[in-house]
Length: 231
Image (cartoon, rainbow, N blue to C red):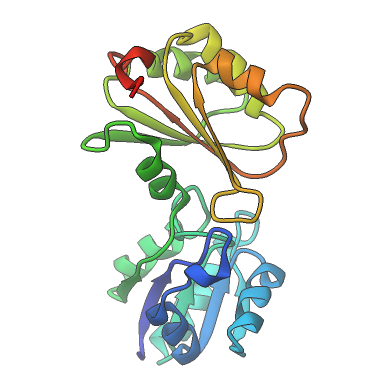
């Protein structure tokens, strides 16, 4: 375990989705680098794990990297986790991983849950080739990106927040109105929901209901129309 950086996937909602290996790894490392110590503490308490936690997020990442890598080079082992899912996927941590590799530190994957793959596997859309765009830019370049995606011939997966999901669906209604879209909310959690249809149909399904939670949106390739999936 010594002198290694473990990239540990954690549940995206349901705590039972933690793997045996992930639990074992978190129990054995010397320290855990995480986005929010409060969030990670909930997970650790559930599995009765007591470890030193160090926050690593977009705000403090630059000056925390040296501290973490220094500890590893001195003989400690460290696990990197995100608040949910696989670290480095639209989450802080990529710079730590890159810096570790540059310094010759062994980086070990401990795979598990990922909202991206979870949504893709239940979408019913082609999975042999897809593109992941993370969060589409909020302002600058947003419309240009949506226009580019409207010509995409692969399945598209994006993340979206509670505050912009309806805005995104209205934009998809403008740029790709006939496209089949699958919207997943709160995957693996108690109030998990999935909507399928054109952007307009999903907006109608939303109605006046308050749509809170984390969203993954899967969009069909350019030539995949709703009529192709009527079965």
